Length: 354
Image (cartoon, rainbow, N blue to C red; front, side, top):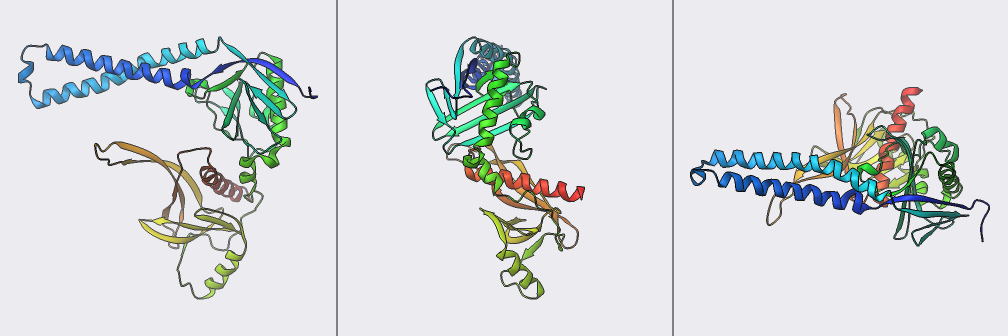
């Protein structure tokens, strides 16, 4: 039965094959061909068997740099061409009440789900609003260019929850693309945002976000990060006991209580517990590169790590390692740290405005 908000539109669907997988084959294939022809050319030169080690090193660097440059030269137009071809085929999106249908699949937004809403400007200067919904093993991603943040917030009225970091299809975000020139597409996105806002109480992502006390006005008596001794004594012991009684939210290595965060972390490789004042400290999520040793090689790898920055009792800037971010950016553990980072930043900004 058709509901009052029934919407049906035809939109392009750009799959991960066109945004990532096939372009990756083009990139790697071009690199392989460049290296093959380069090695063939240099080995055919007179005196190739008598080359010095430095000459071989120079040729190796030429092959590495040259193959990457050629790979990028081929990759960019190839990806744009593939995305253009993918956009020629259109599929149906149907919104009927709280039921969202796409490519033979169905999401029921009246049941528990995880929904992301973001609106901002992409690295290639496109104004974009995107929605990503996960329910069980089913995921749906839809976006609309030229739908700015102000319009988005009219339908999902929570500026802190609606993210600002957005990427378009050209950056590998597979999904459905609405047409800003088609009023039906804009209406579809607006209706979907309305439903997500109405059903936010059963949105796992929103529930996690909402568990943080965003309305708090930080007013801590201690303005520096203090290490907590295991056998704490003196006047601070009683204050710490009261702080621990008032925990409002607790995930992993951190707990928010009153005007402070009780934090388990590492400072200069030493594990300890810290009392972090809200508004006087910030959190960051940074990429850290490291050597991952295996039985066959020692490849350079990277991971995301959450840090807390502030000052110690002597006014010295310190940086505490909180936790390594999980690989799955939609996992509860990742979102807990991500919202912790946003919460700390919001508290700092709030204090500076007071």
